[in-house]
Length: 221
Image (tube, rainbow, N blue to C red; front, side, top):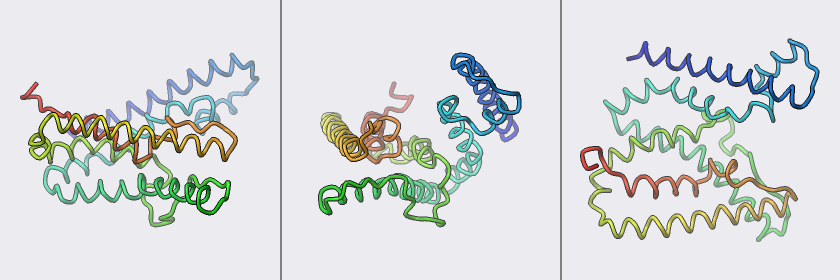
């Protein structure tokens, strides 16, 4: 129902602004900052860093909801195009971040340069997902991808799925932990493996191992 969907999206925006205003007001009082109404509104409209940027996930969800009607129609009527969208989105988000990690590893271990590579957009102006949390589209669409390939996943023996999942999770966690050490050592500041890990292929693979390989349809529950 497109009408309900639009109102739901608007409701999310309103709720985000309300929670943002409450948080900004409380933190302003706690920090004993003297701000005018204009400064307060400016902090709210610019999503003041260190105050209300923790609500970023609602913004990401709104971005997904804006595109969702097109995704739904595509998924229902042309699954190949849906898979194409998820692939391209993954390439330009997770793939781009992986290239940053790879360049950092090359700099440190092969070129002997204590230089990190992070936040570079290798696809430049040709990346339609720049400026937003584009990787969230992949996470959102992953459930649909799993459903498309459900029969293939279901045919994998449960023991084999468990072994693959456990080994995969261990390897991915070690990889993201190692990246954290490298970035922290080179930059001299702690590299947050949680916040910075959302767009990492290692986190994505963990989601796949945890959810996809142990996925059950409602009829089997």
